[in-house]
Length: 301
Image 1 (tube, rainbow, N blue to C red):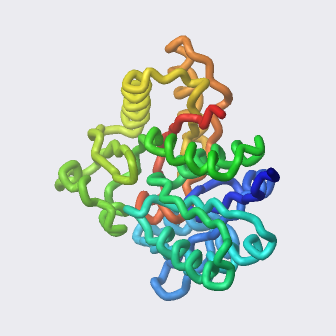
Image 2 (cartoon, rainbow, N blue to C red):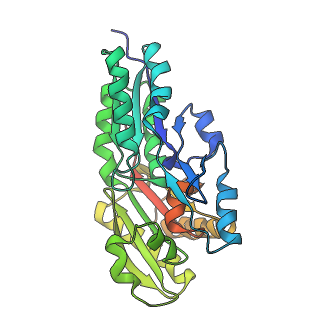
Image 3 (cartoon, rainbow, N blue to C red):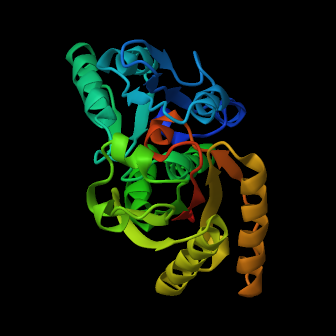
């Protein structure tokens, strides 16, 4: 029996470099970003991530907004594939942060009206940003290995709960303006200059402490990774990890070195840790200086 053809689609929250998505044949449905609340630009297509952060760095009182892909955006991607009798795995940002998945589900229903035999899986990744990127790359790895469609979907569902993001931000202002303060309110208070530590787990963000300096924040992010490795008895060859940053690439490179040294100090080998830039979808909430890491279990197939 011939195996089903399928393609991997994701939304712009994945924050994978454009050259990588092109190399891996990943279809990305972009988010939109606005600096005036009226005119929205497609991220990566109409505004670069560097320009997005540059505007915030130039004017710290600039608080941009993002908007999810529309139903039509997804229809425009699903339809050509379905017409070619190609199945779809569409991986969306956690539903706790965006309605992107609802747009994709709406598009699926529209397509199924005309093509009732189309196979379209729309998945809540329960993650976002660079961690979503790692998750998508696991899907692509299975696709490249010709793992069957159903098995790929099942394995993605199994590994997604292992995903974590541990990160810090420059200040709390963007989280407040972006309406993402939620459970982090308790660590914000009225204290000036604190650096919050934040964990994303199974689609939700949780406070993980505060520090008084950026350097200490970076050390605490690594401590959170240490706790994770102990909890899961993680052998790093079975995990995929990346550094995520906003505007300051040099700082990300320094953090990458510290992260690599820490993992090796545990007697574990690690491949070169990639550095991915956090895009506008999450950057509107973190401001220009998010820094941290994403980690998820590899599919192992």
